[in-house]
Image 1 (spheres, rainbow, N blue to C red):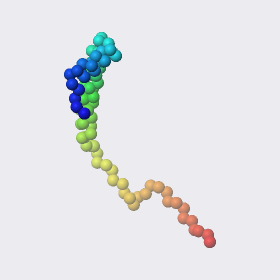
Image 2 (cartoon, rainbow, N blue to C red):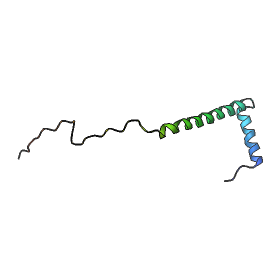
Image 3 (cartoon, one colour):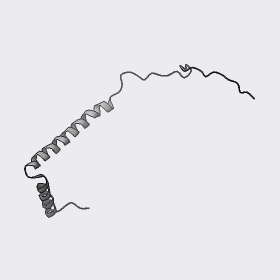
Image 4 (cartoon, rainbow, N blue to C red):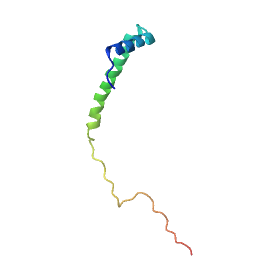
Length: 78
């Protein structure tokens, strides 16, 4: 698939003007620009959160010390 030529771009732009009207296009472009700006801002803010290390080391669990109650022992009847 190739890029649209000049005639195709003019046709697409004409359809956009018919659908939204000439007065709404600047508002539409402004909204798209703000959305892209907010997206980039959020992506920059998330990077430090993902790369930070916790201040405390994770606690180790002792496998021999079980906090759960043992099941009662039963014998099978024949």
